[in-house]
Amino acid sequence: MPELPEVENVCRGLAEFFKVHSQIESVLVQSPKLRYPIPKKVKELKAVSVKRVHRRAKYIVIDLGSVCILNHLGMTGSWRIATCSSEIKHDHLALKMGPKTFLVYNDPRRFGYISIVDVNEVQKCRWFKHLGVEPLSADFTASYLFKIARHKKQPIKALLMDQKNVVGIGNIYAAEALFLAKVKPTRVSHKLKFLECEAIVTAVKEVLDQSIQSGGTTIKDYRTVYGDVGGFVTQLNVYGRYKEPCRACKNLIRKKVIAGRSTFWCSKCQR
Ligand SMILES: [Zn+2]
Image (cartoon, rainbow, N blue to C red; front, side, top):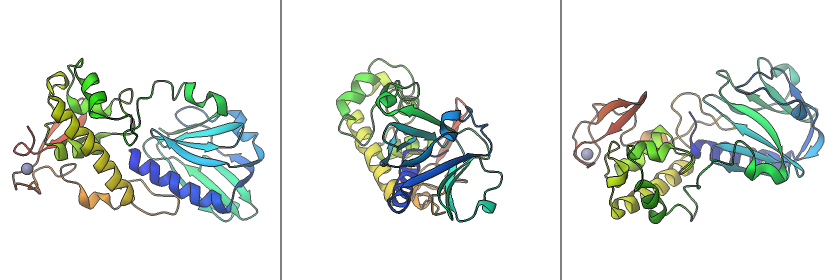
């Protein structure tokens, strides 16, 4: 499932594309059935220009001036460029940008969705109103994390993955950040010391930054608009490395399934 660095890279690719093709002539909806059906209003868009593309949490926000198209990639959503309408088959939606230019959205497992909201309603819309702070912003600090953690009895990994606390961190980056911070993922949140929260916040920012620079992590489906895969997979320290030697101490990486998600850590480096 794409996490923050992957969505950020898709956004950057879209921004590059819209720099050259900023006018949406029309929208073709071939199959509205995603996790939530594509609203009719999206189909009715005609001759609108893209002002800006940005990311909020794991959402892509395409700003059209008075309204924004919101897209969540779910597990397998992706955008690609097509040069002919005959290339658009079994896809969910295509933005027609010119006679030979289409931006096509496809989502085989249909966990993603596309919606449309008024530009003034974005922050308080149903998708955004419960979102926590952006991990790469100045709002995500050790004091912030410590304050939340103090009242929670859940494992720190679950706390980091809860989008109400901090957004965009999923299974991969929670595991990687906790490795860098030397904190075991199963540690109970309210017992964490301030210095440990500080280490976690620094590690989260570091791991997300590095992954964005490497183009994200491709485990299976994730691709950028230009079809590139993410290179961060070679830099993973613990995620997906069960029984492989820890890069720091050679101890074998452990794995445990918690709440249906595989959790990886080094029992020597992480306490
Ligand atoms: Zn280790």
